[in-house]
Image (cartoon, rainbow, N blue to C red):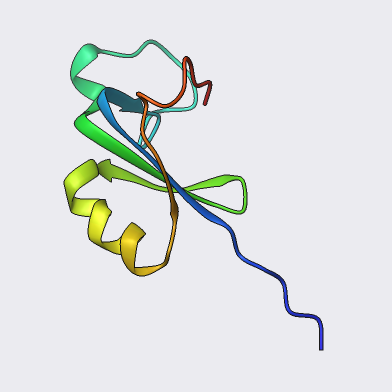
Length: 80
């Protein structure tokens, strides 16, 4: 039986993150259409963004699944 290892990484806290959720595919955007998350955390599963939200809301889940914790103070820059 082939058991694939699932790798989880949790990044944050990020002062502000802007998601592309619920945006129209075409046309101009208004500022109020952008979802800004303060104190954001990003949970990555197998090199793909799995969940983004408030860092402190996601932290317990990240801990419970044994995610590698990456603090932004540990890295110089991050590109998502």
